[in-house]
Length: 480
Image 1: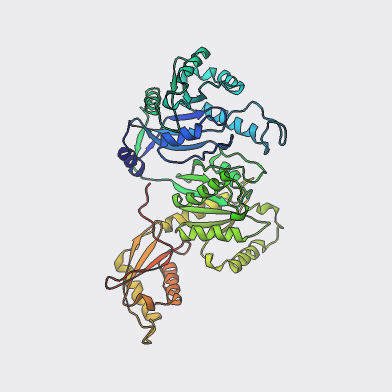
Image 2: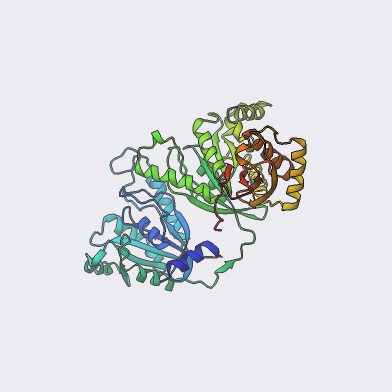
């Protein structure tokens, strides 16, 4: 079993191509998401006692028993899938979509881990076992909730269903999970796995916004798949659903997130975790695409989401989705843009793109814009030309000379990209006004090629006093 240190080394420094795919499947509430998190050695899937929390397949790269693989958590298989409001069916009426997506994911798997519960074989379990018969050659059975040997003897009764072997485990406590990991690796072919050297790393885009603005529709269009369940019901997406695609020979990774509502509107634990996962996804993204309903326009909640992206140093695109429903007037986009700039002047740098995720109108412009933003995020300015530009800026707008407002800007350096951050060494940082900071930031944007992204500026004294930070906070090194 791989050590935590080895796992962190893999997770931080290495990426692989052509990974074998292992899918966890079973009825609701048997512990699929708990086992998923256990195998990943981190909390990735949302877990909750409520049956049916997981809806979309949730995938992540894992390092198991010394081998890298792609691990997928799926929604629970249910027999009773009545219409919305019907007895036994989900109140949202999404059961059919969840089960359909689960079965599609199983077809793409190199190995399926069927998770059952010790001593409790339900009608759903039996029907699912029947459906999995054609996959017997790539099926492995784990019997969960046998912590401390509890009900482990009953696990062997499942051999009566024709399985060659079962693996009693406790996903919650980790009992016998190491043995399961060894069995998973033994059933897989790793001959096609290649180390990714980092060249041409995908541009990572996060789709965020309020519920029902078209995030999943756009994700499915970008990936030419149905990976995200699409429904008119707000809050359908719960976990972050990832997908990959190419545009102009450049790889992209898209992360479809749950709709972000105001705190006062979030009443369920499941939605609380979904919203927090969506916000955290911005940390993993290069470009954040905020989907705004074109008819509703920019709301206060949209402004808060955009401000979060700005604080994290993420490039942002305001995507006006459902643009096809707007009056087709010649100056409609200009009017919408002017209104957004008026309501939210702090995000004046962020591009605004109209689109229709349903039919694909505007998607190519969206991707071209994302590429432009990524080029700016990864741009580096050498210290010599930066300070030559700084000298010009100081000549054109000298710092004030009053006894309390006087300061000297000695020199500047760019200390990071993605997010972009500059440090200015100043004689008296406390004397630098917000107006002068805005001047420096605007000149960096205009003269150095950072016109479309947020900038972090830190004012550092020539001595060893505490620095003053302005703009986007600095993040640690990215772990790609």
